[in-house]
Image 1 (cartoon, one colour):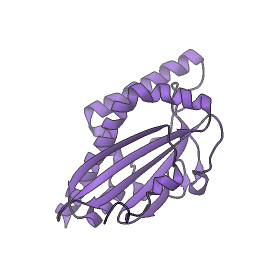
Image 2: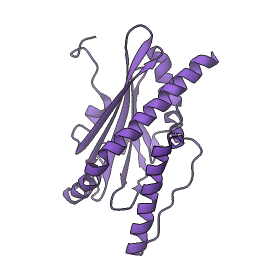
Image 3: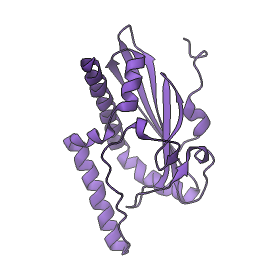
Length: 206
């Protein structure tokens, strides 16, 4: 399939203009349909098993605690979750499925505020995502794209786009993004590692 024959990217319709974009890739053993199934079933809570990623999450939580104490505001503490799989997401909630073209692409996203020592996610319906423009927030659209890589391997592309809803939020978000972008890339690469492990485990179970 040539580039001109490829179907349009799901994020191009959902979030065509972004303030920041991060793309990571990994070649994974297995054919595209099997790897696509692994993308949907991978438990991304396993990202926290990596010591460096766990340390980053702990530092972020500590920073939020300090900022909340300085500003004398209550610290938002999200309810703990046992698993985090794309197959668990629906069309309503915080993180939602935005579109799917199996076994090639799946897109998901969230609306929230996650800078200046505060993380707040909005509850939305998937159909609200593309047009959400309430000031003070940013939209995060992410996708996995699965393409053949030879006869027995698959290239998985993980893209994350972010767009703020107003100029003030954009400035605040970019101050957060610039120093943290390399670490966010590391988290995305670790998520791809989780997909690879899930694909291997599923193959071994058959």
